[in-house]
Structure formats: C-alpha cells, structure tokens
Image (cartoon, rainbow, N blue to C red; front, side, top):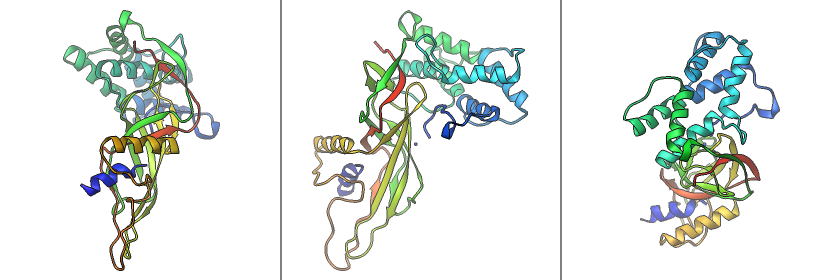
Length: 304
C-alpha cells in the first residue's frame, strides 16, 4: 500500500503524426515516402521509390496517377498532414472518426485503424481505397456527414492528464530510456477538441539513482516532452508547477497523504545508519498531469 501511495505522489513518447524536418530543413522524397508509409502501414516499406509511391497512391486513392513522381508524393503527403478550414487532412479525419465512434484515439497504423473502425460500424473490414473508406465513415459518424475542422489556439500551461504506459523503476530504468504515455482525458480549447483521449506522448528518463545505504533514497527524473494533437502535430509539454499542483490535488482527492510533490523519489527520508533507502517504482497506468510548454496553434474538431 505504501508503494502505491508513493507512486501516486511521485509522478510530479515520438508522438504519432507527421512533423517537419528538424532545423527547418526540407524533407527529401525518401523522407516523405518513409513518413507516409509509417503513418499508413506502421513501418517503412521496401522496393524502389517508384514502386513504393505507386503502392501508396493505389492504396490511398484506388488508382495511380500519371503525374511526375515528386507531384504524386507531394499530393499524398500534403493530404495526410495539411489542414485548413476548407480541407481537413486525412490524419485529422481518421482521428475524428475514431474519437466519435470509440471516444478514444490510437497510434496504430492508418490501415489497422480503418479496419477496426469498419468492424465497429459494419462488422467487418471494407474494400476500396483508404480515402474512399474514410469518407464513408465520416459521413456516417458526423451529423449531416460533415466534419467541422477549425484552427485553435492551445494556451501555454494548458493541463493534460496523462497515463504512463510502461513501468519505470530505479532498479531497471536507465538514463535515456524512452517513456511512453497517453492522454487520459480529452483536452479542449475554444470549444474544440484539440487532444483526444488516447493521444500518444513521448518523454525520457533523464536521471536515475538507485537507493543506497544510510537511508539515501533513490531518485528518478523524467521529462515529458510532447504529445500528439488531434490533427497529428506535436505539442511540446513539460512537468511544470501548475501540473504538479493539479497532480497533488488529484492525489489528495484519492485519499493519499501528500507531504511533498516531486519526481525525485519517495516522500520523506528513511533515517538511521546502515538503513537501506527506498527504491522507486512507478507502475504502468500511473496518472498525473503535465502542461503545455508554450502557446500552440493546431486544428481542432467540433464535437457537438
């Protein structure tokens, strides 16, 4: 019981989605092809670039165009990642349908997500192009068959309740280990859904110190770096003071006695010479709050 309470008090991944190249550099054709394949199929595919782009076009639209290779790739890449008030991207449409039908979003490949949604709606996966199948689902999922996508501003320090997906502990975790987490609740901004429950986040272990003699407790530091918005973009996050206070309030509401709120180890010090300190275990499923690092401009969906 003590360990559970400690874990509740203590806690005070890359996100799925397409992002631009680091440093503002242009993405190459190979970069774009690999990025699209990871979104659609989960992994980068093999074969020549011509064969790979041909497969993408056929799967997405049901036919291959006669355009130049770069034009084909730019078209499908733009459709998957770019939003406007007049034209929603493939990514946000898929996430919107998934959320409307299940009240959850996932990080699975688009192909798998489509099949799962069709099983929910029709009992079995459908045939045809990804775009045509998604268009059919949008028409069935939203009133009047219309999905409303609008630009939204997510203010700095907006709270995001998250759930850690893998167990962390000072006996086995190492500095640099990836930390996967998911949104535990929806996040709205300006009345629009901007982060759906289940959205994936990425962080890392930044410091590990196992427990030592003389009552020196273990230390475990974690950064919570970003989380995926409903439109597929990445929002920078951190474990700030506002998030710590909200986690503290949540722990108190659950009946935990909170004497402090840090992610550096168990609360309190075990005194006495030659007394082994306390190790830290944060079980998978542990919930806490993080907050957005800066103002973020994304596209959200109207859910009512």
